Length: 110
Picture 1 (cartoon, one colour):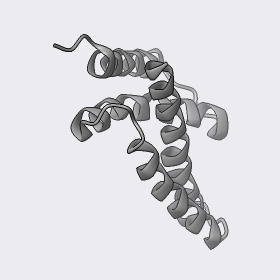
Picture 2: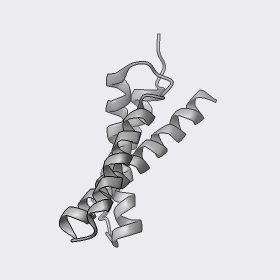
Picture 3: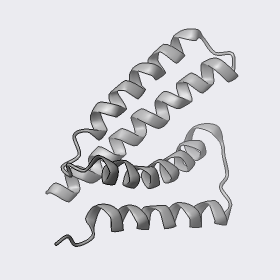
């Protein structure tokens, strides 16, 4: 159950961080309403709290592993919301990152 909870927290953290950044981007770069940036800031704050809920107590490990989730999630976000079409190299890089997440977070410990 701990691994499932961890994975769900990573997915939620990615949605909050990537979504928050996207909302700020929309406001600052795409001339969308200013309040979208405010919502983005709130989402980014919630991301920080969500990351802190990971079962592993090691900040460095959690944030290092989350980096791989962020890479893959950002590409997926671009596909779903911005019409981005990743190359095979984008996909390969994201898969390498996700393998790294698995090794860092879920590899055997002494």
